[in-house]
Length: 364
Image 1: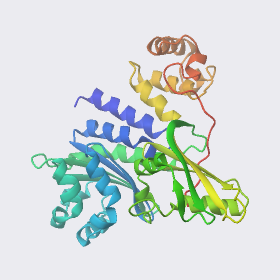
Image 2: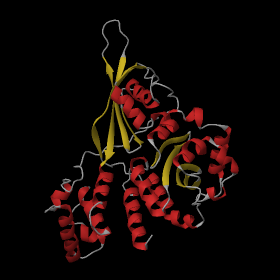
Image 3: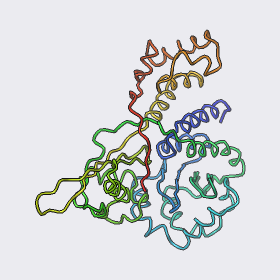
Image 4: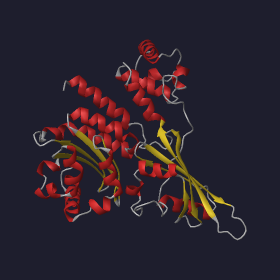
């Protein structure tokens, strides 16, 4: 790949990772860009908490394999061979390229037999982000048998690792989110928030889409036991607090609120939980700007405008003269089909209009 092409993809990754919305919301375009950067056949991104994997994105796996990994993880991917491989990787001294010396037992693991080999892949290459002694994310590249990885990929992924770390650590509490219409609905639980009494089909669909079985491993089979975040909402209601939570999932975040339902005489108290899916305004802006014929600086200016930045601040903010700024702005207007700074601020370039900032809560 030419240097200019690599630089363009690194710019794409940098813009995505500086959105301040974590890895979950950018996972799909991130994997696509890394695959193009490295020339690998596929890329997958896993993010972790203290309990293990809580979400993943695989840019080339068919839907049935993704569902297998999510819906039957504990049954199929927790064998001794898989557990041993997981422990080996997490304890490897290398955070990039440990799989260059992958032990033979890897090729007998369920992960290899059921997720990697069926996609036509054989060789993995890894890049982990470790924060405060714990692995928070792992990027895997995959290639077929005739294309093994080599040590040159270590240098290639070093800057990518730094960007992953930035995406995890530098979250923006004032990041903006936009609700996706018709994504989600309402579920009803008992007063404890532990048992589901009724659930809308759209919520079941949303839980599957958001990989809720990986986020909350107590969910098995049909969703009859409420996810842990519902219990957290019920506890907020018990404390007479506003019951509202937001947590990152593949492609965005889940927004959940709860309210008590007034029982009829003699009926037990119930809780109504409203669940929706939201996409990042920042990521939407970046994706639209990347699709336009702009220079890196012009994209930065466009993003500054779309996110509500001041036009007057730009020369000092970007370290350019007033005259240079006007030239860049003219090119930006032409590429976006706009005429004024206010058009960019309003999302007239195709980016979603600004919504109120939502502070991220904890799913408990």
